[in-house]
Amino acid sequence: MEDGTTIRSLAEVLSILGGEISSLAGIAEGLQPVLALACSGPGADPRLSRTIQTCDLLTQKLEAIGGVIIDLCDTLSAGYEVDIGAAIGNIRLSGLAATLSQKQTSPADQREGEVELF
Picture 1 (cartoon, one colour):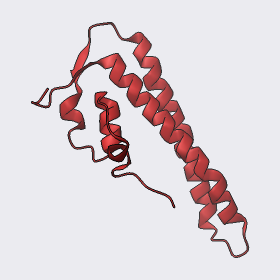
Picture 2 (cartoon, rainbow, N blue to C red):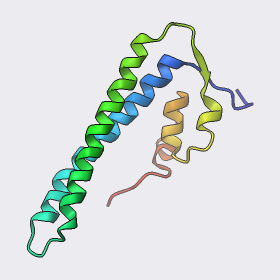
Picture 3 (cartoon, rainbow, N blue to C red):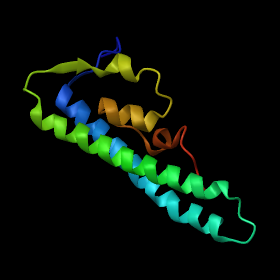
Picture 4 (cartoon, helix red, strand yellow):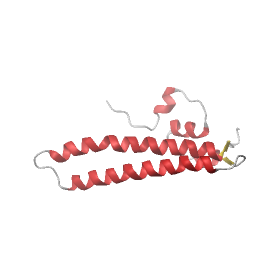
């Protein structure tokens, strides 16, 4: 595997990608109440209501795409494999790259490149 080759079944890769997209939908959905609060105050920028609608559309699309990708896994014939190594070589989020390649990472690696709230 030192040559960057990481062979996975296509169904497994799609399942992981679908799960990641569904997870992003959950994050986008969590932003909506915060945006609604920002929009409800006095002197709120009217553009915020469009941002809320855009965030809702983003959530719905991510949920739908994630579901379609996961459902596609059930339709694949066994035996289809892909080299995920080359495809994930440029991903900067080490935790995501590890998830896609199914490698184990340390907690420090998983935080690399991700937003830390404090």
